[in-house]
Amino acid sequence: MGKYTTQVKQKETARVRGVHPIMKGLGCFIMIIVPVISYGVAMLLVNYGIGKGWPLPTEWLGTPQFYPWLWKSSGLAYILGFLQTQTNLYANIVIALGVWVVIGGFMAIFFGYLYRFLGPSEYGPMDVPPIRAKVKRYKR
Image (cartoon, rainbow, N blue to C red; front, side, top):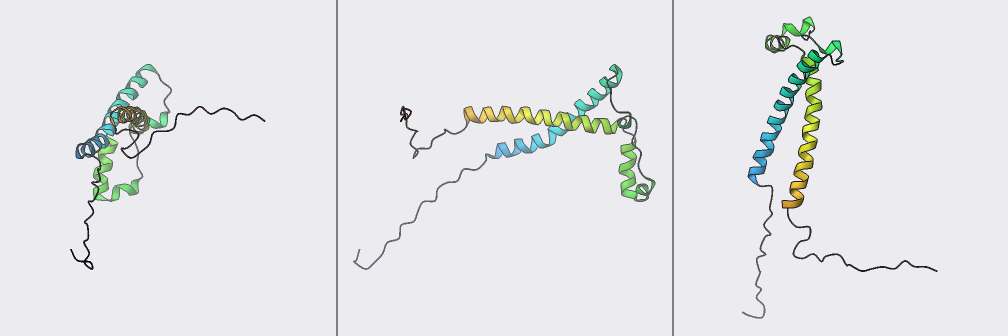
């Protein structure tokens, strides 16, 4: 090589590790399956609660009623017709939201512990562990 020529080293790009594709699919599956499971559990809980005399608000029970002007749209009328066949729809939705929050909380705790035990280490190869020094209290 001559004195005035330059050689450019190509830097190796660090390989960025993203989320594993299986985990993306699992997250999508969970986003769909958890609301369905929570609505099913809510239907069972509402029916059980009505049979056992739980104090559910009477406005939540029965079939839903809609404003007459909503029935004028043909596409919306089909959806409203289906919703009006559902009994205890409001109670099912409210209880399903509560069940959804509980299931989501348990899953967050479970996946947090799972990541803690199976995830990457706390320190990378370039990190230095913290100093383990005993420090005495300063007294005047």
